[in-house]
Length: 400
Image 1: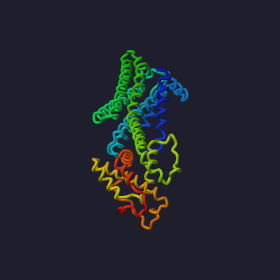
Image 2 (image 1 turned 30 degrees about the vertical axis):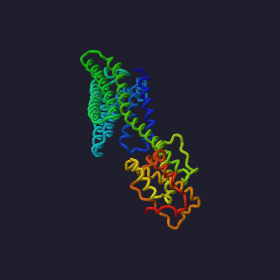
Image 3 (image 1 turned 60 degrees about the horizontal axis):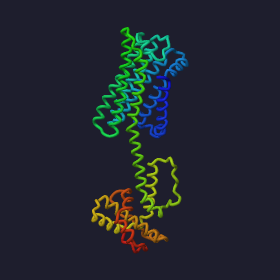
Image 4 (image 1 turned 90 degrees about the vertical axis):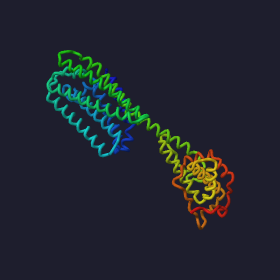
């Protein structure tokens, strides 16, 4: 692989991290989000520092021959720990147990990183090697142990990831299972990478020369494995985010009939804050729900509990279930109240000496069901056509 084969994935990881950055700043205490961002950052750094041009530049800047080798090995070890910690936090469980397991992995790979640096400092690597460091120094005391240690650490992470993801995949379904299976495929590539590296190193120990496995075959396998694993980690999260956004947009549009019904009586009519085009779907839903509740507050004095009861009975008689009948009754009461308020421009009901309390309801209203009922329910249509807008004294007694 040339430099571009390393830099393109590094830039891709940087772009993903830039997108997740604002979420990380808002939710820094979320261990799952921290783990995802740490993994993306380490993936990008591994590709960046493993590129031969970067290796040469780092060696020149630091003035230590082959110092890039332990840096890359340390980044690979940190990347392995980040993958394991992410899976631990992703799967969840008792918080204390999750934190304890995460700290064990972090501590274990922290010890590996320190050992790698110490072994490199004890070894002797006078000849700069940009692509074949592992095989060229496979017999060098201390450097040999450093190479075996980082490969063993990666092997432990690979086996642990495949075991954890494989077992978890058997217990779940849908996009999460698909993501886990993609991660397993990525780590199969990593195991193939380690096999190529170990084979080349062992061949050197026995006087053979299979350096091409290490310098030519292994980098491609490592690149493929890292990218496939990253896709596996991001796939369920991206699908979940897309699903949440789609659900929020659907809710926003389904609330439209109720929002428009209440718009004439809304205290913010004509003065609503315009949402920017980049505002999230969730924020748009929140504003629309807020507008609906504000409109209902204005209508409370005009709510007719008797009309609501009659509408509910009619909906039940027409075959609606209890929840649907309740939504149709609420929608009918709202439609009638909008017309009653329109017929009371002087606000005689609101300014009366004895303003009634809003009718009691069994828990929070289902705004989406109400909005759909406004469009489709014949019970609501009957309430619209049959309601008489008269003075407050003509309204049936309100439930208090």
